[in-house]
Length: 113
Image: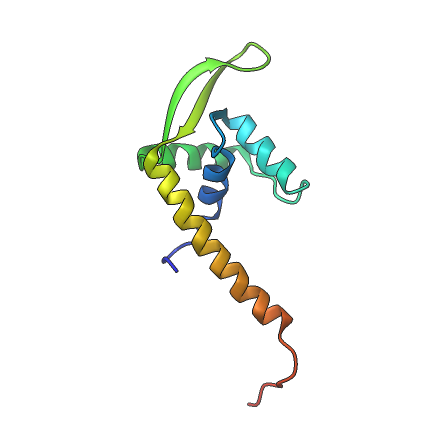
């Protein structure tokens, strides 16, 4: 697993939110919140910091457009590098989650000190 992947949790969630096409920041946050049945709520400051960081890394591109309610909004979309990062991040998070679930489901042996 890659170093520092816990800090990259939001990055992977944002990349996944953009996997099916461009969204503005509010759309990304709404998708994450809705997909997780309100379990994960991304704060605006953290979200926009992540979007700018991902764009700087070349994983996202952006352009201005009109939102559903006729407001000016910046829309983000994945680049090919962003799609590669999403695949790698998904693989890493799946391996991590499976390892945690193994620990949580473990039965039997008691620890000896």
